[in-house]
Amino acid sequence: EKIQDVLKESDLKLESESERLSEMILKPANGLLNKKRLLVIADGSLQTIPFASLKKKGRAGSIYLVEDHEIVSLPSASTLAVIRDGKK
Image (cartoon, rainbow, N blue to C red; front, side):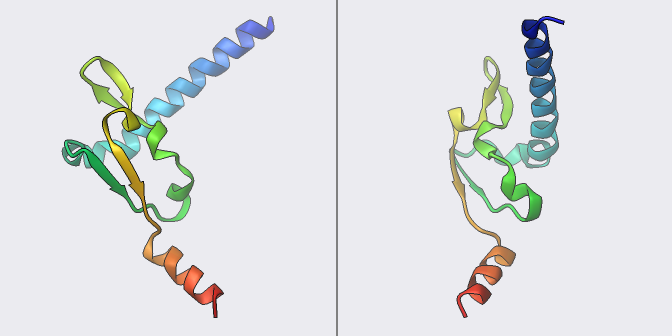
């Protein structure tokens, strides 16, 4: 296989998985996505997700969340507890 074919296939898979992840995370909050500022308090493995790079359905197809929203990320209560306990 040519390297270009491998890269193209990889890009397509990444796009597909990204759309799937966006759907899983954003669909339950779909009714809240009409606000300009989004407050994200992720816990556990959700803390590793770059929410700004998730895509949502926009006026002209799929757009990155950060194109329509200010995204504010705050630590979860469990994260704050770990930080607090670590400072003792």
